[in-house]
Image (cartoon, rainbow over all chains, first blue to last red):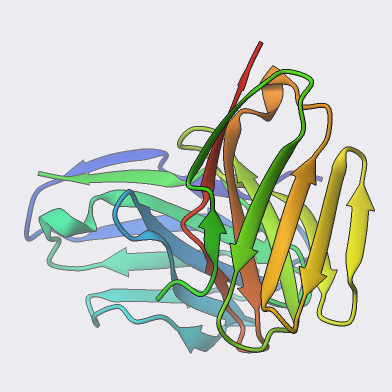
Amino acid sequence: KAGVTQTPRYLIKTRGQQVTLSCSPISGHRSVSWYQQTPGQGLQFLFEYFSETQRNKGNFPGRFSGRQFSNSRSEMNVSTLELGDSALYLCASSLAGTGADEQFFGPGTRLTVL
Amino acid sequence: SQQGEEDPQALSIQEGENATMNCSYKTSINNLQWYRQNSGRGLVHLILIRSNEREKHSGRLRVTLDTSKKSSSLLITASRAADTASYFCATGAGSYQLTFGKGTKLSVIP
């Protein structure tokens, strides 16, 4: 089985721009969650989707949004980028849902905001 | 906010020695999971222990869970240089999210 894939792997943007990150889960997994990882804050939960429905959202501003498609692929969007949005963005998929069973993580997208 | 707090923040040992990492958390949980992350890459799931379990083994890994103390430990026996990584505990509490600690950075010196 192919693992979780994330595109792009690296991204450089400037303040004020917007960005869209993509995540393809493992075949058969209907739950996709997103995390932001920074040296200062560690791993922070962004949101979780299951069968196209957002079931939970972390404590992030409305500039962070996401969606899930019928094939379980997910995208997250960050608008009006700020320097503090520079981070590794990780996507994870699972069968039963985030927090209920093991999560399979993708390699991440490294976003740098200049 | 961080639910789990790992201790120590960093650990350096010789190859062949055992490594023990601890995790404390604050609220009731359904399960506790341990993950490994090699420098700047995605996380790899190591082991999941449910709230009604006290101990679990997987190869060279041994995890314990004490729900009365809200704490868990991860023991890696006979460590290898390839075990060098950051280790995170994460708690699942039935809210469709995992809450991670800040991790323990393990260095295994050959």
